[in-house]
Image 1 (cartoon, rainbow, N blue to C red):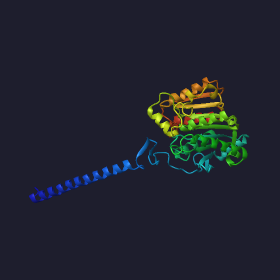
Image 2 (spheres, rainbow, N blue to C red; image 1 turned 180 degrees about the vertical axis):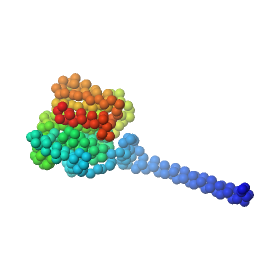
Image 3 (cartoon, one colour; image 1 turned 90 degrees about the horizontal axis):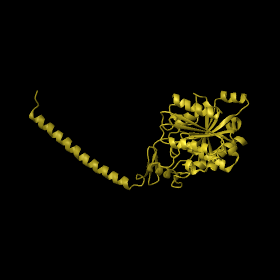
Image 4 (spheres, one colour; image 1 turned 180 degrees about the horizontal axis):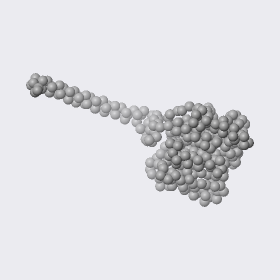
Length: 355
């Protein structure tokens, strides 16, 4: 049945009203959006100073907006592995804290039954020096699994992050944490370290930026020729963050952001291959180094050069290169049950236990 002319006119009038209303709203909305854009452009709390996506954005006011690694999971007893964890503040002045992990009571008792305490592993998380934490679910799950697999007392270090605390803050925190571990294992300050840990079998490890920290911590210990150097038996560098010559402008700007311009691209902190003479390499205190490389990692060439430089320096230790085909940077942190991730962890556990 056809609509009457009156109804058609009424419908047309309603449509016109909707269209003109929408247009007016759009005009007002556009003006509001433009005004908001102008406000953001002049607001230092919204104006971007450095875009370090996908990790964070720093604004001109100093505010930092992080996009990952901000979730906190509490220390606990892990039902899957039997590993217990707890948190300790190491330095109240800086807020430096660590999360300690102890294997299941059965594993601890088995070690004690053999008359041996457990190796001590000091671990540094990744995150480009700017994101993540020792309390993030990814690292909490990884350290639970690694502690159970390797049978170690693990100390996961929650070092300070850039840009609020540019390098060398993370390196200083690493040194403070290492000193705390050795003091507490020797003097009995921490019950897990004193009762179950063997500080004479000390290992340093870390992924990405954490691998960089582990290397620089070992080099500092070797150069100071103190008690720490004699105790470090191995250093595991898991897809570590190293750069070298001919990197992109973006990589250079990122490094400058991380260290607030204090160290150039030729500094041994970021490019040990080009900047360290052979005699300095030979001071690396550990007897063994494990370097893992994921062959789709853009940092792979620098990681391989590290092993070549170490071997060519006359260093008397043993350097092993472990390559995972078909995987990207630090793939092993996620999906721990996958065959490649499981093999990566088994390799690290075997390295710690001397095989």
